[in-house]
Image (tube, one colour):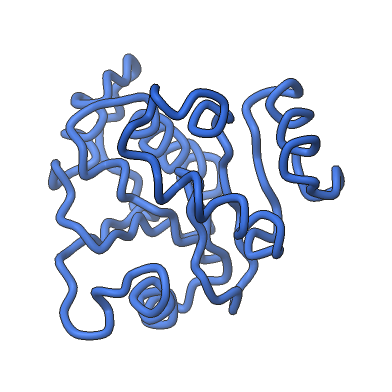
Length: 177
């Protein structure tokens, strides 16, 4: 399987979602060596190697090398591809022949051409908007993507977040793990 993961959180030098993205991509590459994992973004990454990413997000267990099945594809885009969530991500996945997309931070492609998974870390952008002054786009867009099924599956870190999401966004419980 060829999995494309949203690497946009890795464009930041630190943070919980950056760490989640780094840890998840490493774990998938290590656990499934016959699969290919691609970290993709429309922005240059803050680091150039997985080792730098491990250090910047505070990974305690260091790997001697980057797994051979983990790849980086992040760069500034031109033309239509600057409309990342509409066109760019789809074009990049077609180039990579990706089977699945994993949105690590509330995001999935606008056009559901492939199966996708979205991580819903918590509902804080909707619970207390003042905590996330710059999360207006997430607050507007993510509920629509979830309701209309752009994400084939939604992953939450806990049963409490899962229940809150089912209740708040009226998502079928079978689509959230």
